[in-house]
Image 1 (cartoon, rainbow, N blue to C red):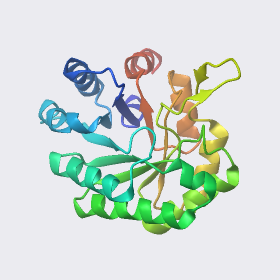
Image 2 (tube, one colour):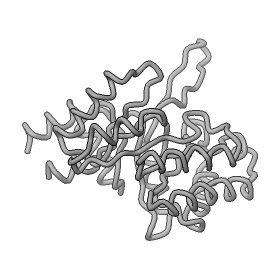
Image 3 (cartoon, rainbow, N blue to C red):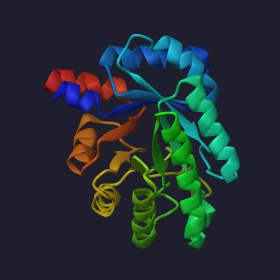
Length: 233
């Protein structure tokens, strides 16, 4: 059970303030608990590959992160560059504005273009919907259908940085919710997996998203979750 839970975790090293010292620390955590992967900023890929050499921890990289606003050719270039640097998993953010406008042909072209270049290099692609912004069930279902049709490997809830401004002027986000995860699991094809991200910080939350059908979970609270798992199991 412990290994199964560890291999769900994509340990995130993505905060804008994180330095190479944070990368080294994060990679050490990832190796200690033998998680599935680290998810890093694009410029960190080459160093992460070096740090994780000889381990079973994979290197993932974010694309169009976190706002998803880059043009399609830019996302393709960014994905290809990350693959050339050694990333074997790519987490891309969709164009959120286009999704909210229902411009599905654009979204399909975008996801297909990134997926195709990733697959050319043998990398998998996870598609971030940003469900704090794209909240309508019908839009989430449509995105799942597109991801299935173009051969994406994963659908994913959030970047962890999809902050919504409240009436008090403060920003917050929810991230992965069980209803959204269950809807995504139900709406994708049999070859597409689901990744939870955002707000999963405890072992019970990790187990809950697993039970909702997730194969992966983005996390910054890896130490807390795994230490609790080691104690409990």
